[in-house]
Length: 412
Image (cartoon, rainbow, N blue to C red):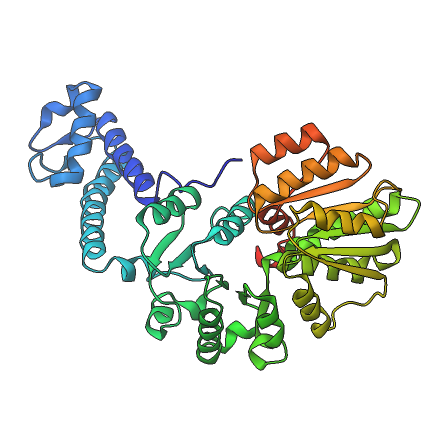
């Protein structure tokens, strides 16, 4: 995939080329110089040299335009005044950048996008954004300075990166948050994101029009905040929830419709991703499912959390097996209850351990070739894709599923 690159030429380059051509064309059309009358008979390299010299000393050492057509003299006078002014403006800007780089960069920001956080979530969003809009200004706020990561974001996506605390009112003012098109709070600190959103919305009520997008890593905390005024003024989301929605709606629902019998689904790994997949299955494909088997090292507690949140709208059969997905005994208990060789059950290996997911996926697929097996990775893995294709396994990436399910309004 090609990434966005910052344009190589700014407006000054185009202005410089235009002014150089004004000078060169004027000299080439028969205009003389009071201190260098021989320029009329000079070759094109000499005329180019004099035209370039206008950017450094203007016409102080070569005199003023004389003779020739009026149009030519006019072009040369444009170069006489424009070239030194362009050089002076570049020098002044360079000095201001050194004295106050951030203030100079932010002074004209308007209708821009502010992103708090430099993690992988930011990269995924920026990749989707730049595929749709390569010109919008983006400022990324890093909690801590990381020169390599900051430079990667600058070079890859053409953004401005500044280190600071997004909850600080002073930084919000400097970033022109009140004039931003959209603010995305995606740092690793959930409380910091909510704090920043609270301060922004209080100071800039205009942002309450759906312009603040807040990522919360913990679904339970996010849902506890759902009834608050703050949550109603901004959009809150969780990457696992969006990824689970994409998995169910784009892949699993269609697969269930193709099978004749109602389906058995095995959720091997019941963390944030597994819980949201089960919720989406219940709400969008409950009629297609006969039973769900949950395997997790902390399965009992996590199932209680799901029940506490009362998010399941279907009443299909549910069996819970507490244990590691890599332990053969857990699978023996499961197969004592369900016949995995019957029909085409779906197994989703969704733990946070990519290695365990892939290894268990290979083992279970060899033992039961009739299964639809999905093995989770966090990022897109060429290794996992190659192995999965070889053995008939579906490799699913959290970040790829999230990217597929980013709402279009977040990129507009």
